[in-house]
Length: 216
Ligand SMILES: C[S@@+](CC[C@H](N)C(=O)[O-])C[C@H]1O[C@@H](n2cnc3c(N)ncnc32)[C@H](O)[C@@H]1O
Image 1: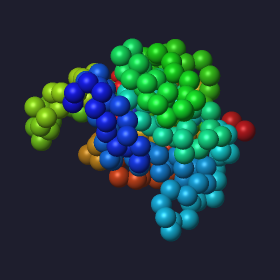
Image 2: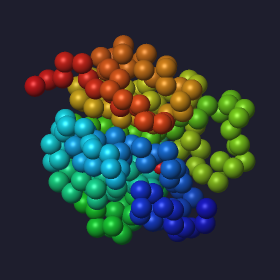
Image 3: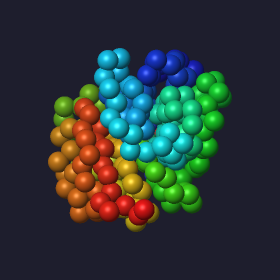
Image 4: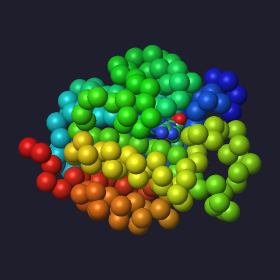
């Protein structure tokens, strides 16, 4: 991907550089899941569920990369208070460029997972790196143009996802929305259960969890 290429995500053309993951179509399901939680229609002819959260809820996108998830959420739910974080300074610069491009008021934070995040959120969404370097069905050559920090994780690809689940559980975050390969879903669901999260729904690669007995 050359410097400053454009890639479409949820109907908007995002600026992408070699410092960020190229947005994938399967990640658009995260947006549908968030819209559904606030009772907004996300597909023509499909009635959204009854709203579980107000539209002015607080949402954090962890591992924002190009900012495609955070910027899209802010554009689709204007009332939402949206923050986005990444461990990569270079990725955050690309995300800020995209937020400016779309006049999306998103608060950006440099952080290793939730380590530097001080506020609490109603929803945490994350498309963290989840590729296991040993998966032989992955075309490593095709992925070599994207940063390794955006793709690979230890522990069968689940190391960062598990850390985020346990951090979110400690903060009693009500909804946790995670993308992972479907072959990893069972292990993520088991791990989430052991951290007081129940599965609310599955949308393609996207898992939506709700905290058991959230604080009122
Ligand atoms: C799979 S990419 C997703 C990018 C974007 N959210 C998307 O869906 O296209 C994962 C992102 O997580 C970031 N990341 C990796 N390790 C991280 C960590 N420990 N804490 C926060 N972000 C991290 C990477 O820099 C990368 O931007």
